[in-house]
Length: 346
Image 1 (cartoon, rainbow, N blue to C red):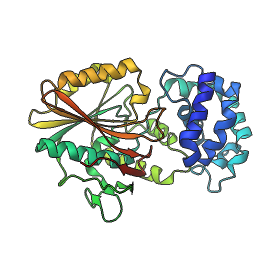
Image 2: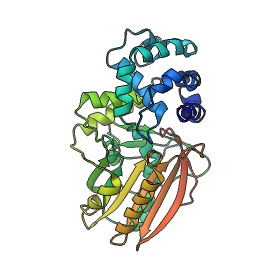
Image 3: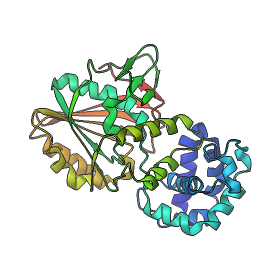
Image 4: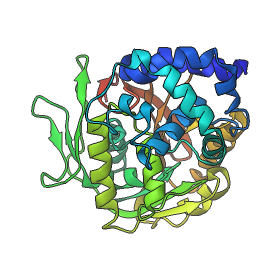
């Protein structure tokens, strides 16, 4: 129970307090409520418990709970939202009344947020790797791909403000990212040709499965209307293109996937907010796989990583050239890609 309680306290301080008044108001009483925390007793190791519980409740409301008294606190369920200060008694009652359904969700579903706006933080990292390699095409490999929406990052339009834009101007997926600080990231000179797109995930999401898409919607916080619009546009685009997301553990399957990338293409591996769900041993195994594969060809790994010791996520780039890794911290960013603070001179 102590671990679960601490998870909600950390979640409130690090994320909810600045981004969701509803979840911020709910976190404090949940952290002290053994009955509610008990619903999370059998959650898979490494899964973020606050995200799971909030998504489970949100999912049930979206799936047909619009008439529930609790629904009036959810901006995407009701047109008139009530003050979240009074939400907890109804939240608690809802959780206990639907305890079996909630246990089923938190024990069997995963936090697989397809946050498309994080591509705004990855794009400048890809640009650095591509300038160094000078390859004509790239092969994209995403770890923890979920529905694979970020595999389509080259199909999105990016707007960083002050006239800094990139990507197809007619794209239906419009990403807006505010730059912080003095440094301006350099974007790709041209959009690279993509010769392969492959994702790997323990539980791939089928974009044509409405229930799975509803779960991904439930992972988006109720107040975040712009995230919902972006997600819907990305799903619609993905449904027009069959994406290859294979089921498996990246530690076991990544090497085989990398070997399917055409020889004349440059492999770009990427992941966002995945490492926090892996054990230290799994992280080391993954690094060993990449190091081993880099003995045979150059490759790059762009990632967004957030550890409990850091206030904000970091954008990292590891370039393997002639077998050796060159690791760099490029930027800080918001968890959902709303802003980017570029730190690198590259």
